[in-house]
Structures are given as C-alpha cells and as structure tokens.
Image (tube, rainbow over all chains, first blue to last red):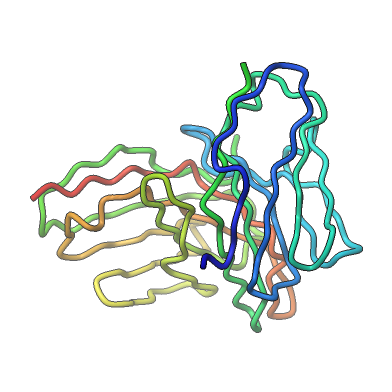
Length: 114
Length: 115
C-alpha cells in the first residue's frame, strides 16, 4: 500500500460548494504539507503542519483551510470553491534527519471547479 | 519576480544525450537544494538533495550548486527514454543544520527523451 494516500483522486465541483481533500500517511512523520500545482507555476505551498497542534500558512493560503486530525491525517478544505482553484493538489510528509528533510508526496487530487 | 526561476523548456533530446536543467534563485537564505522528478499522473519524487556549493553525483545524475551566483543545475548523462518526466528544482531555508521544511519550487521543465 502507498505510504501517502489522497482522496478523492479526481473531483469536479461547482462554484460556491465546500469540498474537502483528505490525506493520510503511514510513514509516522510529524511534518505534513499541502501544495497545489498549476501548469507553468510549479508547486506552491498552501499550508503546513509540524505536529498536531501546529498549523502554518504557506504562500497561497487565502480561500483554503486545513485540519490536522491526527499525526497521520491532514485535510484541506475549500470553503467556497471558485474556478481559479482548479488545479492538481498534492499532500506531502517529511521527517527531518539532520540537515536532510526529504518530502514524500501523495499521488495527487485533480480538482476541477466549474 | 519569483524567488526561484527555472528554465521552462520543454526539452526534447535524443537517447544518449547529456541534459542540463537549470534554476536561479534570489533568496540568499536558501540553504538546501533539491531536484524532484515527476512522472505523468504521479507525485514528485526526490532525485537529488544537496546543501553546499559544488557537485554531487549519483549514477547518471549530477547536481551542481553555486551559492555565490545563486544558481543550481542538474545534469543527466546518457539520457534514457525512462528519464522522460517533469523535473522540478526546490529549495528551503534552514539554520543550525536543519531545514525549515517549507519548499519553494521552480516552474518545472518537461523533458522528453526519444529513442
């Protein structure tokens, strides 16, 4: 089974709807991240969490919220979806080992807002 | 101006060619430098991780960092069709030998290696 899983893998929703993207990991890592990927823009950080009680905004947090329900679960919500939130969303986890902090990515959720 | 600029490509090369991928950055606080590879419909996976100026080699891949010029490169020797993917540079700040974890990515370069 995959170490980092995301559900759903694909989602089409309408403008104004609330949706939640879920991420689960079995790696036992404390650090978890949410990114979005748009063509020509690379990946941009939305939110990150270094433990269950620690939530931080990333580069593009407006219009998004997150919940860290447990060490293994980190959910991303779009309170009122808009078309420019159409993108590929990735969850990632990491566990720093000295200077090395490799991030492990899930398979992504393709979200379309119509 | 973006903190990290990556030559966008796309890049198409014949099998066996040497590939050079490049990124420049403006934030002198970046201490850790990575290259991720992303196959179609997959999440990125780490290819190379470096933290000092100079070269790091791993098989056919060489990562080069020049902190004075704020420039990093990835070289792929003897490229193979299986190397066809999107390559993303990424960087993070840190202190005391520890990365802060937040990654800033370049735009990505789509590489196609044709037989």
